[in-house]
Image 1 (cartoon, rainbow, N blue to C red):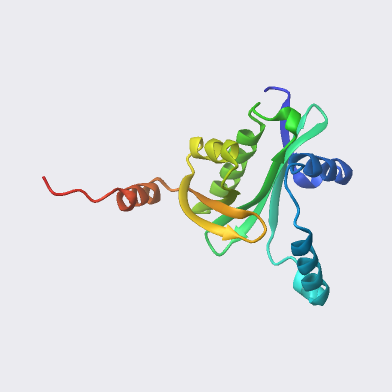
Image 2: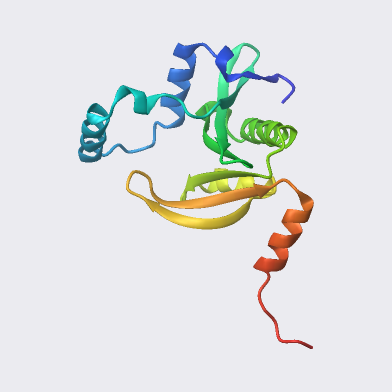
Length: 177
């Protein structure tokens, strides 16, 4: 994995990023009727509503000079970092690229003073869910999305004391000995 390097997502050529995103999400089925509803809602919205309210942070993974993955997110509230989306070229999966990106985003979040990092994943995306569980994320919820179907919410608590509180609260109640 020594051939991989991380750079700011802004450094990734737009055409390469678009091609990688198409590749990474090639197995995602689009809903035509939902796309039409979303397009009509977007057309009715004021352009000011689309202005960025959050300062994004993103990383791009390169093998030599070829873009092979990305991950990006933003601050949510006062103490959370939300991982919005990530992807790895299908030919580069299971080589540690995703874990490298997540570790770098966790390091960024910790350096910025965030308490936790959150993400949501399609429930059937076992590879990503398992990778994040191995990196210390915890299952913290479930939801249903009209776009993606069932989602698993994952949270990485960056503060060890917060992790201990979570573990104490999440432990099943047992009768006193």
